[in-house]
Image (spheres, rainbow, N blue to C red):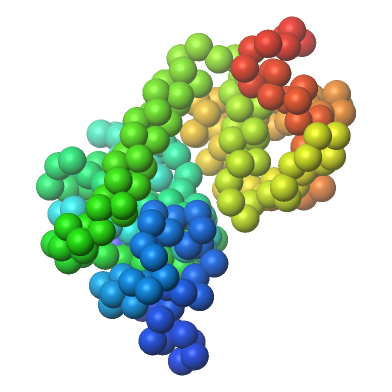
Length: 252
C-alpha cells in the first residue's frame, strides 16, 4: 500500500467561516441536497485537504472510517492484485463521493493524478447529519445505485466490446465529466481533458498501451477526434464516436 498521504489544506481566510457556499463543486455533488441555510453545519463536519499528484488518500484494506467528496482534480481508483500489480477500476473527479463501503474496510485505493481538493467526513458524524437531512441520504443512495450501474457497464466494456468500442466509450464518458469538457452542442467540437496517462487508460480498458495509441491514431485519421496534446482530445464528431461506442457503427 502507498504510504503517501494527503496534506491539510490551508483555507482562504475569506472563506473560512462557510467554505461550502463558495465551493464550485457543489452543483455536481451530493452536497447540493443541503439547502444554503444549512451549509454552515455541513462545513463544520468537513475536513478539507489537498492531495498532490502521485499521493493516495484511500488505501485498500484500511478501516473505512471516512467518506471523501472530491471538489477539484482527478484520482485513479485501483485494486491490488496478489502479485503486486494494480488494476485500475475507475477515475473519480469533481463531485464524486467516495467511500460508500459496505464493509469495515476500503475495497479500493485512490491516488491523485493531478492536484486535488477533497472534503473528508467521518462516518459517525455524517450519519447524524443524514438523520436530519433525508434529502442528502436519498442522494447518497442514488450515488450507490449509480456505482452499481457503472460496475455493470465496466463488465460489459471489458467482456464484450472491441478495443475500438472500448476507447470510444471511454472518450464519450470523459466528455460527460464536470469541468473536464466544453458543453457539447450538435455539430460542434468538444475538448476533453485526460489527466491520466496512456498506460492508465490501457489498464482501465484492459488493453495494451500500444493498442490504445494505435486506436487513437486511427480515430484521428478518420476525422473523429483531434489530439492537440498528450492530455487533451478534441471530439470532432460526437454522434459518430458514440455510434462506435454503442456498437451501432460498422467496425473498421
